[in-house]
Every structure is written in C-alpha cells, then in structure tokens.
Length: 481
Image 1 (cartoon, rainbow, N blue to C red):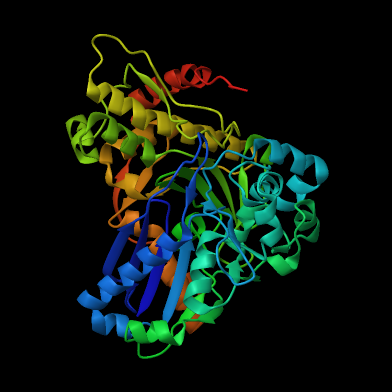
Image 2 (spheres, helix red, strand yellow):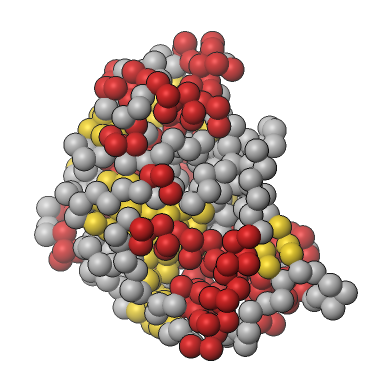
C-alpha cells in the first residue's frame, strides 16, 4: 500500500493506493489563506500539519488495515511558498504563497544583481517565485531574515515534520529561482544574489528517489507495521504529470485547480522566460517540464459561487454539456494578477460587454471562456519555444465540468481528454512516487496513463467563433503599472 499526500492551496488531499494502483480511499481537509494587504497571500504552516494529520487519522478510522500496510509515502505540494525557519526548526512567520505579488521591486533587483538568472534557472524572476520573497523579507522584515536558518517550500516543511529531515525534490526546487535547471542542483550564484547559502537549503533528491523514513512515533500513531519510506515527491504540477503518465515528450496536460497551467514534458530545456514560460525539472530523472501558468482558474468559478451565493454545481448546471456559441460577455481571469504571458501581479479581472439583457449564465460561461483564453495564451508562448500541443489531458477540480472541457477543446482547437478521477491527479502521482522509492521498478511500468473516460473534440464552427473572439479578448488587458 502507498500514500499520496497533496498539500494544496485550498486543501490537503490524501489518497491510499494499493499495489494494483487502485485508489482504495481518500480524505481531504480544507486550508485557509489570509491576505494581510492587497496582493498578499499567506498561510500558517501549522494548519498544513493539522490538516495532513487529520486526513491520516480519518483513514485510520475507515481503512485501518490498509493504512497499517503502507510501505511508501509520496508528497506533492503547492510550489514557490517561502517557509522560513529559525535555529530550532520553528516557522518565523506565515508562509508567503505562490500567488503573493508583493515582491515586484525585488524581482527587478534580483535580475539586475544576477544577469545570468534566466539562462541558469530557465525562468524569469516573478513575484510568485521564492527567491524574490527572501529579498523582500531582507528589506521589510530584517530581523526575520537574520534569524532564518532554513528556507523550505511547503511540502518540504511537511516532510520535515513527518521525518525530521530537511529534503526537497528537484521539481519543486525549480520553482524557487535558486536551482540550476540543467544541473539539477542549487546554484551558488543564485543563493548569493539573495544573501543566502547552501547551508540554508534542504538536501536535494529526485522525485522518485527514497528520501527519508516516517518518524517512529507517527508510524505508531497510525498503527503502521513498518516505518514507511518517504519519497522525494514533486511540486503539484509535476506530480500531476506522474499521475497521468505524462513522462515523455509529446504529451501535454492542463491543470484546472485553484490556479491553472498548460504543461508538457521535454527531454531538453526549451525555455522561453521572456514570454513567461516556466522551466521546471520533472519528477522523473533527466526530464523537464515547460509550462505556461495562470494564477486563477477554478478559483474564478469559486469567486462566482461566492458572488451569487450558490454552489459551483448550481452555476454550471444550466449551461448544459457544450456551448452553442461564445458568451456575449468577456471575462479577464486576472483576479490575483497574472504570470504567463504578462508577468503582472497588478493585473486584475474584468467583465466586459454587460447589458440589461445579460443573465447569470452568460457571465458564468464568460468566466469559463476567459480561463480558456488565458490557457490559449500559454499555448502560444509554448509554441514560440518550439513546444507544440496537439492534444491535452485535464486534471484538477475543473476537470469535472464537461461544459468547461468542451470550451477548452474549441478555444485551443485540440482534443481534450478527461479521466475518471482527474481531480486527484497530484495526490495519485505522489503515491506513485512513493511506490517507486520503495520498489525501484521501471518508471514507465508504474507511471502509465489512466483510462480516459471521455474525449472532447473541437467543433469547427465553435473553433472559428472563438478564434474570432480571442484577439478582442486580448485587447481587454491593460498594464496597471
């Protein structure tokens, strides 16, 4: 038996997977995010631990025998967060998250101080990444910076609590701007540019490698027969790729979670940082992931749900299974700023084309289309980097909506595929990494694609209609700085 634990932004999700790669059970606990100021986004690391332990306690109640037999654990996590620890391993402040936009000035300073940043990391300095956050801390909270002895990404902090060891995998580390993406190792020049050293970084491992073992007292808490091996794990999107078998060039997938991304594995680095393409090491050795990332995806639908005071299912139900034509309303999904292609944390959302005749359904459809158009922008910058997308699988909570997947197929003009349990992709991928760390099996034998349950083909009439709308949609964006 194997466990996959996904430390997301809105929830911790844990899945229990058997030797036949069937999800035997799952448990989830919500997380809350606070925004002390506009553009800020933080979480208390203590709630990650509480939520994770709660999911495992719940599995002990419902599936005690299976949990007791767990041999390997894989971790997946939200990327880029800055968790700063003191000499005793205690957090010095709340974690600054991936969607925090406060460090715009620090990004410019970082690129000025280290001109080789883009060539070394494969990425442009953006406020979401970890390194600029540390420059912000050094300027605005110098006492915290001085006291910082260890900088961990969210799932690495969870691993520290679970195992007592500070270890990170190379895929998650890629999102820090401290990693030499080609060498898959910390860059001393990158660390020096933020006044840090290797001594303040966790040890690096590959995602499918054994990294540590669960603390004995925790194994006893969950009545485990042996102390499970904890794998290197992966950032949420690389873990999602492992979960759906996207481990070879030529595959592509869309993540429709709180944020969104269009990602494709490559056997070489195909960077395009000037246009906001992200370069991450894959959780699979000698592979990388090129990605276009948007900061708001399914969270846009959650925003609409709060606005109208109904559930997301109630918003989607009247739309049916597929669009008949584009909505007369246009929506920019930049509720938390945007990464690809604009790199503009000050960007904000917009509804355009409202009239007295506009109803709720038109607005909801526009929200789904706006996210799809943003993903089309990601596709275009990947194409500029020489990475073509011919079809795409979809994972994340948004994959439950057939209407949304039909919109994506027509906006992107490629077939879109849905899985039966696509919303558990990252946690399932983490469980696979936990298995590989224990068994040492061939990666391709374990990381097979799950059964696709539905394919959404582009409709020529709708493809043309959306293609006509896309340029005007792009014109709605105006930089605010």
